[in-house]
Image (cartoon, rainbow, N blue to C red; front, side):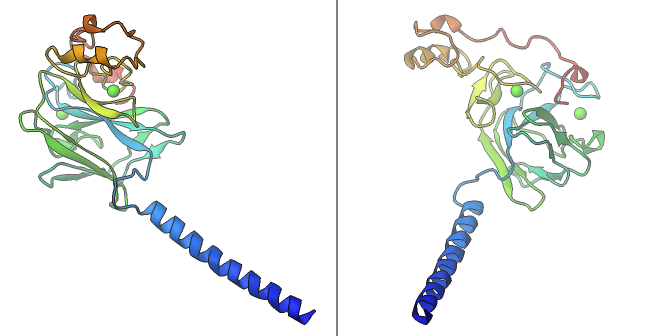
Length: 233
Ligand SMILES: [Ca+2]
Ligand SMILES: [Ca+2]
């Protein structure tokens, strides 16, 4: 009996030690993988426009550049205490409440006018040089970041599909709304849309017939949009 009991105890201790080690390693590495900027919250930089002229205006009636954040989760996320920064190191802390509803979008205005509201930043985006944008959470950990290049026209740099997708330049801006599939098959500005025909994967449903007639995708947002009419603002 004693021998069995001792053996059992030994096995139990060993199991506990192994269990502790495994749990510690797994949890630690999984949550702090510094090699890739794995989003900690399911918030994504989903679309941005660095060359806004008349696509959309903010509450002040100004056609400022904007950044669209997408909450790719089933829980509302409060961004108060987060920060957004550009490549020059300019960082804007979000001091007021900016609640992003589940599977919803929120616009931040890169207008160097933080006094206009909690979702207004103290810097602008460069259309002629590009920039790097980073979003950090309340602990200073990077939630998402993106580097974008020179903008053509009023094209936006957007993910397809929302949240998890890769970025592509798009001639059909969708501020405060899903990026949809309008540009997934024709991301290039100025005549490069024809390249989509080669893939044939066609999630956009454009068909596999070459797709060159999808042309410039210029049928998107036309004219100015009042910010008050957009859910994400
Ligand atoms: Ca403004
Ligand atoms: Ca959008």
